[in-house]
Length: 89
Image (cartoon, rainbow, N blue to C red; front, top):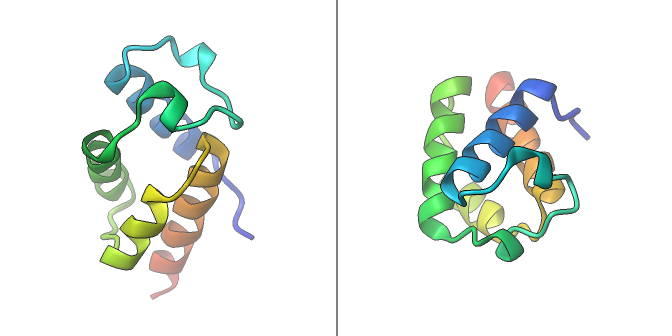
């Protein structure tokens, strides 16, 4: 299982905190995405930032998997796996 980097965690947390109008310190790995108001538009914005930062493009299947993540930690693991897979190809 790929290691979630601090840079990825910071990018995700800062983007979610700005999009959901929350203090970044209130978001941790157990934070439920639905609990903080993450919807498909916020997720699309987040994924655009992640793709730009890591110079990758997520497939529709990966995006659907990201949308099913229930917590920040789960989303980070899914993103980390997808970024690692993109780096190999």
